[in-house]
Length: 376
Image 1 (cartoon, rainbow, N blue to C red):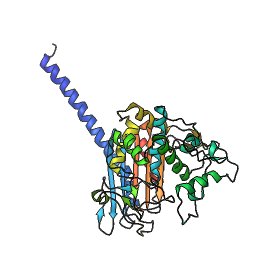
Image 2 (image 1 turned 180 degrees about the horizontal axis):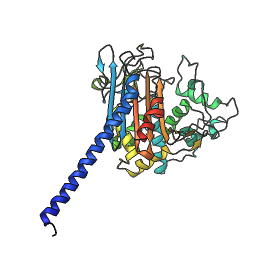
Image 3 (image 1 turned 45 degrees about the vertical axis):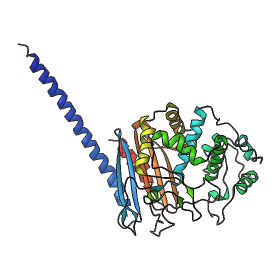
Image 4 (image 1 turned 60 degrees about the vertical axis):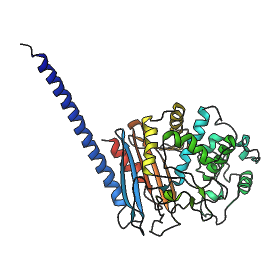
């Protein structure tokens, strides 16, 4: 005898409920495993004996999970929170690379445009052959004295910077586009190119073209005051960390910015783990309304220069090929700040690490946390 319709409906509802319960239990188990992996790796690096604190955002399973440790300001006993603001150091380069990619998608500039097209005062034999694409992929060959130790004590005006570029001759016979040499000066020049192309400050460009469309409301490119401190509203400054050396010595006031260049726009960005979680989602989950911005983010991640069997260079991002996975990441560091973003697009996994101390061991994200999460 066939079961009645009401019995069949009840059976279907029971099966659906059981499936929902099983899925919820699986999600709960996955979340617990994720927390175990991340906590077991991060907690030993941010103990009470370590200076400062740490904020992390992990994107997995379509959601962002936050982890916080230690103090934003040890003297004030102010704990780190997901909304605490950290110095991003060279993570800023990801945003400038995205501006370049977005400009190419919109037909506003080309990767093979010589930088001298936008800055005619660049007339040196070498620099006049360097292109925007070479700057954004660190293949220009530029390596100014401000890029490596011994660090200079003086600062340089815009005119002095241009003169240094015009006089640049590579010591080892490098050629534009033929090698990968990480160059901070190259990105300072890229800033000037973008500002000249769009006739607006770099902070305005990043805000209007990236931060606002993504809904990142706690990411800033502030001006620098005379004391090298970020110029921000008091309520924003209250969320800034105190920076520390790796040995615990405080360095600079909260909001400290550092640069060897004394013209506007050459300081660092500040952001929070919560805001950078939005960037993770945009990079990994296509959570961007504007299709051109989505395409630009994806463009920045594509490898454009193979360094060796293990490493490759994209637009600011770097590729690291491990045994069974590839990590696409970017790190930044100062003597009082450390920052890291790592992606595994094929697995829809990502992590942000923000620390208010120099020399934080970010490698644990690349070589331990992300591979462990990929195995779940």
